[in-house]
Length: 621
Image (tube, rainbow, N blue to C red):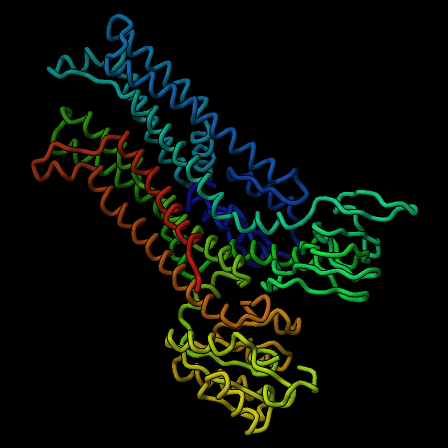
């Protein structure tokens, strides 16, 4: 997929297949999240459907995805190199820095160079455009194919018949082979730069995947053997030494160790593990060799679940993207109509004498229009924002949750397990109340949330005295005591009825009702599976300051989306009229050439991705 129109076509095709219940296609990550009934349709049928409209589908059953992406990138890079060589050669001939005799010879040489460029470097534009045409649709490849074909065909006509045709009208004829070559060169260069920049947006996923070791030491036939982790089965006994990573999830069966679990919990201090304690894939052994029994392997590990959640979140769509997709579907036909209208207006006011300018203006309009920038505006910002959140140990399930966080103006906290920690009862009662202690991060988190203009509420099943004590310790003015699960949901509903955008923070089964009712639901990773399943945001570890961090990141990400969309739309709003020849109406002879148009188009797409990457350098706290 090369533009927003491609993504929209793929999503429309998949969504229309019988058995597909829901589908979201991301241009930036080039992924499709599909909910489907396997009894009605399978992946092979989806693949065939997409191949029918000029696309393809790579599944886990296919070849190695990384190898496919790597080969695709290398092919694109080779085409860019060849295209630049041909473009420079064509340019020096057109500018007469190199001359091979008469004008006809030079034109024929440039024609040959253009043909090589069109066939080797630009073949994909024509093949995809043709398949799109067969299905009565069009995308960015259609615009490139049409613009280069027009400029090339016009140049061929001028090469062999131009002197007689234009000479009889007292006009000099020109060829535009260099334009057709440079359009393809700039478009391919832009795509190469996009690919390199988009690799940066996916760096958080690669970092998570890099936490998984490739091999493990397993006992087989009474001896220790080094095996790929893909071959590990539940109940296998594995040995891990200091400095190594735990390969899969399991339970310690022999030895004592200290493990760095910061990649999961965010806590920097290594955790002591004894026989019977659980260990997680990707965590690092700091001290002590131990053995453990594998329990969750492959995609069942906690780390694999985190990677999958982040991938799905990065591929999900924000509500604003739905509007962009609708615009994208009509964008290319609209641009083609504008290009045709541009040519007609030039000829209507200037006659055949203005045919060259009419064709060049139409070509420039086709080239400069950029659905790519619009399509990349939202998903690239989301990919970086959700990836940045994962780096800060904040797992966000989908784009809707990320967008919703920045709108929160009321937040409801569960007390036990969320604001407080089920301490040993022999601890000094001066520091605790009923065997609990306030989490160290709670007061600072509450203060930061207040500074963000968020109204805070605490719900507790404790009696009035205990609830008031903990609310005061945390710095929360509004609280309720002796509440039941229904009371928590009722508070969320009441606040929503007052027009507030409510976030619920909890960790227990008794919070699940309120979590489901809230506009944004936030769970603690130490909480119950039910709470984490319902929640849209999960905080890894006990640090409550990650909540204001998440809200700050959400606001920056949404602002970035708005910036990207603004510039993408402004770019087209300004550049298309300029390419059509608007300056001529005001007496200016300056105009946007097809070569400049292709350069501007490539720059617009790259600039959107680079702007989104600024989120990677966001410093929290």
